[in-house]
Length: 273
Image (cartoon, rainbow, N blue to C red; front, side, top):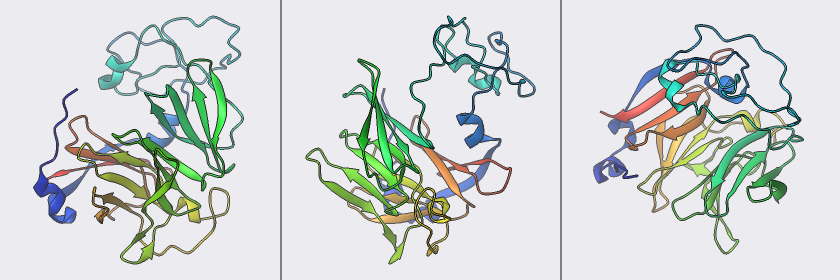
């Protein structure tokens, strides 16, 4: 799929001048995306006005799945077209303390994700459905992704850094400080088509010892960009606790989930002025 690159002036100018912030959605993003929301099947093009009541689900695989899967629910009608009719939710693994940061490797045909409190990364291998320990210790990693050269990048709560795993097995630190101060606990990460690496930096990993190590924050929670030369720049610190991050298909916008306010999940979008 062709991808539109942001022009070079966008990378060279101060991001605080070239980006603007506006509210996109006021919705329960983080929790709703991770939770299974059982319901009766929806007719195409429709969406429930309220969250449907929960119902027990058989995860054993012994009972045949009926299409469409009643637990695939589009809370917004605009997303109904992305619901695949003849597929079902399948549980791949259970036994982690806190699963986060799944990333698909198309060459290896596996998905890697973090089990943060257990300080490990797990891998589901598609060909025989095995789940193996991929990396331990993992620096209490959270978000993972792969760049356009197939290298894995991980956000480490324990190491308070963004790490890249090279093809020869070496580990490169992409970011661990900004203006001489340590990052909080990098959380999620996305790679732009121009080669830059964008990541969020809330304080979740240093608020206690469960998903990292308790420590004093040295920087405001923020979103950062690391260009291909290694220079780190502040994208915005006008967020409470930036969490998930991803790009629009044309890479002209970046979406940020802000999960800081208790009981409130917001999404921000940054685009060129």
